[in-house]
Length: 313
Image (cartoon, rainbow, N blue to C red; front, side, top):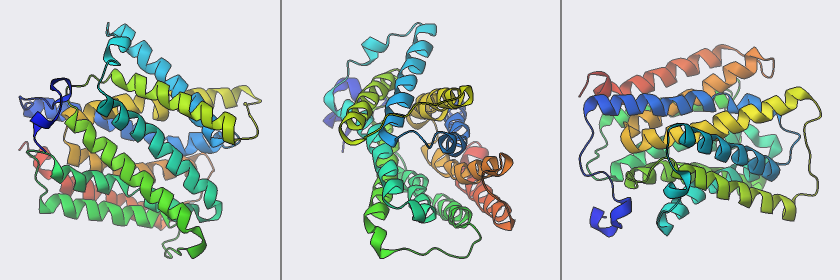
């Protein structure tokens, strides 16, 4: 699809960024990976809250976070929200669609969390492969090898003891929802590149609509409203909304639009081992040789996929 197929306000940037700008934007995008590494721990500590209520609260906080950052930088969130319908469909569809499918998958198959998690973590691979469809992008053997190496590490870490996965035919709906989540997030991340001229402040609007959709779904489909009973619970909820479900989306948007999209896709494989290590550190999971083997696979895959950027090409 040519750039002329898009309205002027949402066409990709005409002038390619310099190598230093790409590296800087890639570093900014990588902040999201660090923040998402805390999501599993924070979410596990907020597990008593119904999923759609959690979406409503955390994305409401994300909207406030983005609006505050924009105000400090002297940017207008309201102005950034004036975007064509395709931008809103991609933004809200990515944020709400991904989280709705992922929460649904875990809800439908609570005893198959390992398999659901593995299918969800196909999204970095989707980003690397989908990026080949972008104008001016080309998928190289190193990107494919790195993505597959990272996928192997992800499979090892989420399968626990490395004893293999056991797909249950009775959970096909859950597996389908998890796979849909991976495809949605991969597509959202890559399509963000097509809307390179849309300011990152527009993500605040996507978060606001996502929060409203979550609130509507909570009121319609969830029977109970649950709030934290202790100060720690409120702090965890605040951290989740400001960090992995808040600031992360803004820096990720910047990285997807101006950084090395394939390198970020493969670097995203650091999320499973990092989140697992945090769970181990806080006594929420046990470790073993698989953790370190997975870390080696994922780090090796990231190096392979990012080799051109590392060499400054």
